[in-house]
Length: 111
Length: 113
Image 1 (cartoon, rainbow over the protein chains, first blue to last red):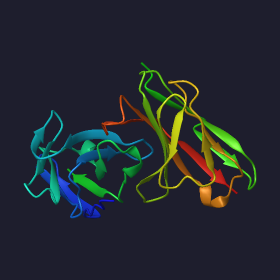
Image 2: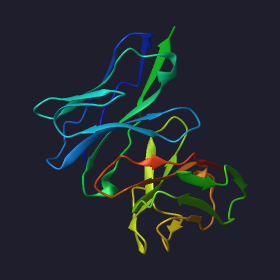
Image 3: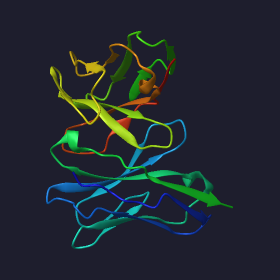
Image 4: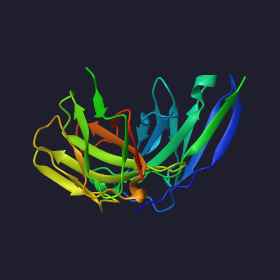
């Protein structure tokens, strides 16, 4: 199973761009990379998913280098409401039992 | 749509008691799953289902049973509660197994004394 490694915590300020990197050295050919956001006392919320190169949606961008051993979630111009825990997941596209949530990155945004 | 709903929101059990955590979704999603989240930890997959009548074990299935008689409902049963099962339980669903854009419920906070 591909294990992910993320920083335990990060701090930033409102209006800044935040990049959270996830390491997944053992990623397999069929694995996809997915990021979730979780606020206190709530269930996780899907942010973005990708396989390679770059994916962008209205919330974030996901950068995946060619070797796919890491990925970077980029949050543009963060606000206080982006304070949350962010999880990077690597899982086989067709095998739900292989979904592993790591400990996540606790992002704190300051005014 | 209500999305994914879970009941109850909070529950306190004594060791050895049994109970069922309810989960329902109104999005006609085929895939549903149960996770537990211990304080300061990520989520761990307990059981999942890829459709009505089909269930399978996740990472931490011991002490829990599930069934999926309808597309909408996926209850989680604790057979004999133990203090180690004190946790927050989340139910999730997604349109199909091959995507991890899962929609999570609000969670059930369970305390076993």
